[in-house]
Length: 186
Image (tube, rainbow, N blue to C red):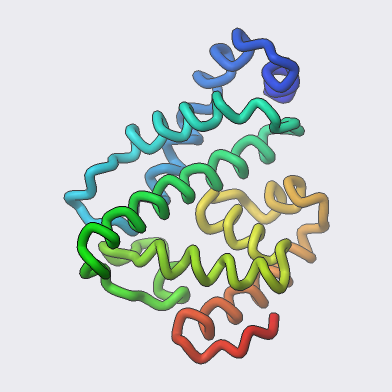
């Protein structure tokens, strides 16, 4: 897989065609995790999310792919962006929408409530990134990407212990932020 990623990064479009069947199941799992927080009648489904992510990834010619974990991390980030963009568009249409706000702790449950406010979570992740980009990436890779501690460590070039420390601190910070009592100190 790493060889195909490198070939694709060097402009070999055929490598992408060989790569997608190898990672489709994992991309679909990431999409299902992302969609678990959406309402049942959401206009995007997991397969459509994978397809939209594929279109955006094809256009990402400037990415220097490293390995499978890096590809899945970028894919998860792309899917998160798609869902956030979709949610922002829906909220703009509804002038605030009726999305139920949930705490970050609730959002981290395996079974998420329908109507997870991806916009609020995205805003909180952006605020965290302003203070600590790596902690924000840890949340993004583990929560949205479904990467293991080891895969996250590999993608970020840090130790698994660092990932776990960042995961705990970032979760606590985001919980405060989403409750509205964060003081913006990571």
